[in-house]
Image (cartoon, rainbow, N blue to C red; front, side):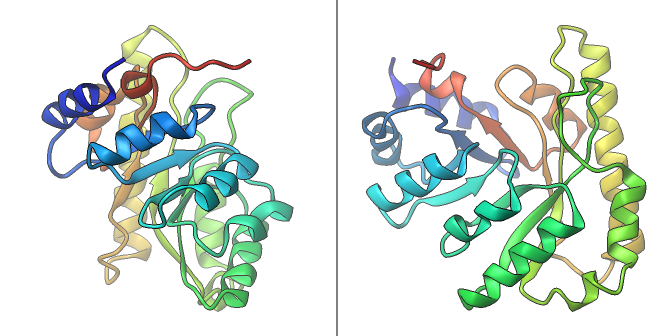
Length: 223
């Protein structure tokens, strides 16, 4: 597995406007360091314990993104260093992130996760939930979080029409929210969608962040 070559191929394929988050879930630190030495420093983890461990063991100029489901009681472990939380799926979680950000004298960047997939197992907010949060009195008191945009995960299917429809819906929701709630907020500019199997469809639909693991590291070893 030539990680540097895989990275080069991906970066050639991606527009300059799209950020690549390398998903390091279950991959050992020596492989991550190969990617680091190839010049890539934006990494994504699904689990808090693995994220915190890798942060402590690896170079501190790596930007760590939390891309998996996040429980409120685990925010404290990543609040001191996390660069971006992709998976905010409740008002309560936002409140907890804000509280931990205050303790660490930080503003933590977040994305709101919109549920676009058909599977029951996928997390995320409905569009109406997001507008309710943005209109709430609570939200306007959360001064230590910054909402940069939306994240979504498409249905796991070979039917590209379904995936394209879901990504287009997520992009439409992003632009509606930007027009209604973030017109004066240039930082609301990120749309995190697309993984190894569907990132090209996501980029077509307007993704600004793709989360890719297996195309860089190969298939995961879950043992």
